[in-house]
Each structure stands twice: as C-alpha cells, then as structure tokens.
Length: 297
Image 1 (cartoon, rainbow, N blue to C red):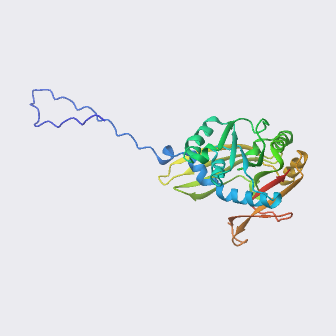
Image 2 (cartoon, rainbow, N blue to C red; image 1 turned 60 degrees about the horizontal axis):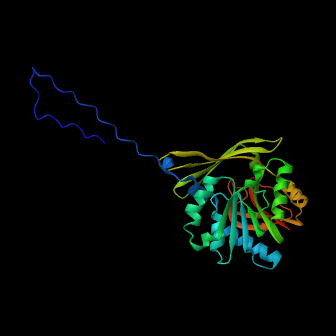
Image 3 (cartoon, rainbow, N blue to C red; image 1 turned 90 degrees about the vertical axis):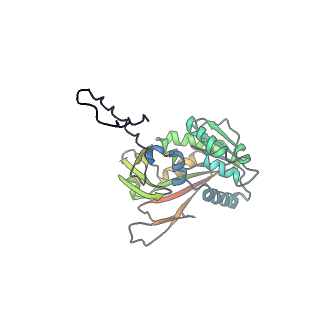
C-alpha cells in the first residue's frame, strides 16, 4: 500500500503555491468467511458420516452374505471421502470411486486420498458415467446422498440399476440413500448449525406431475456472509414403490428398507435423527424421513 505523504514542517508562505496532497489508497476489504470457505470441506462436514454408514452396511452385508465385504464401489463419489474411509477401515479393502466431475475428483485426490497415505493408494478414481460396466466387479456398491435422482425417467434409472447389478459379484449388494415424507414435496428452507457455520437446505421447486425438484445447499457464517447455492440439485424425487419395482426389474432378487429412528416428542415440531436404521416392511409416513434401500443380487 502507498505510504501516506509526510506532513509539512511548517505552513508554506502565502506567496508560494502549496502542493496538494495525493489521495491515499483505501485499505483492501478483508475477504468474508464465505469468500474464504471451502465448499467441499463444508459439504463433508455437513452431510457425510462415512464411518457410521460403513459400519451399518458392513453389518447388514455380513448378516445376509455371511462374510465381510472387501471391495466397494462408490457411485457419484464426489470427493471420494467414503471410499477413503472404507479403505482406512481395513488394510485389505479396496474402493473404486466413479464420478463425472473432474475437478471434484482432483480435490478428493489431494485432500482425502493423499492424506490417507497407504490406504489412499487402494482407492481408484474414474471420471466416468456410473452406468459404465467396464470396471471390475465389487461386493458392495453405494449410491449415497440421493445422487441417483439425477436420472429422471424410469428407463434411465432402471438402466443404472441394471449396470449396478452387472457390476456386482454373484452375492453382491447395492445400497441407496433415499429421503421422503410430506415435507419433501414442499417449498421450504431448513437450517442447522455445523462446524463454524450454519448449513442451509433449500427446496426451491417441486412439480407434482413429474416429481421434479430443484434443491440447493448454502452456508451462512458468523460474519453474516453467505456462500449461496454452493451446490444445486435438479432431481426427480423417486418414491419407494418405484425404487422397489425398478430394482426388481433390473435383476435384483430382494429389496429391503431401513428407516432412521428418531428421537423427540411426536407432538413437537422437530424430531432428531439418531443415526440408527431399522428395517421396516410397513411404517407410518412422517413429515421427513431418511432411509436406506438394500438391493440383494
């Protein structure tokens, strides 16, 4: 920054012209917390819990297949955090992460695979369509955070399920994460605190004709700055009967549903998810629910 001009020692004589001061440069504004934020790191902290998820999937896989899953494929993997934690959980495990977005995969290599050391070398990443079938078969395929909802027609989604079926070993399992409830079809905005920020989930649009929904993730910080619409999702909100029918049509033999148990008074406006998932064949609808779908080959 330019130095401020020195103040004259005495006032200039009246018959001499005074030199005008040059205007000082304004101090550059400090970047806001939103401008300095790392959206991928925030996403991982806000919506992912890979250790808990892996424990659940390992338990259920072992229950139905009488063995421990070792080879996992993470579809729509993003930064491949799940794949990294999977390989960290057992020295014999391997993972394949598949995603179309090259820069996000590069972020994962630098911030997740690299710091994981040897475990990170057992994660392979592919910039490819998740419907490709050229990859080696795995025990378990995960499609987390509702990303398969990018497929908006029954033909597209059944095509993905058929590709996932082909990519599994003979006793393999496909696991999907799904959300629903009466509020899932509403225009709304929800907030909750996360590490150093407030996470904001926004459902901007929903069309009851085709179940197309437009959603966003934003974060607000302590300095009131906002990282607005850091992630946007143009999805079809699939129902459980549709998923069930399409999975069976794709070749899976059995489909199971696990709903998250909630805590709190049903008469209150807010119930808290416990992170515990319980199998149901029948359940009352709620304002909002989170579930896993397991499809057994």
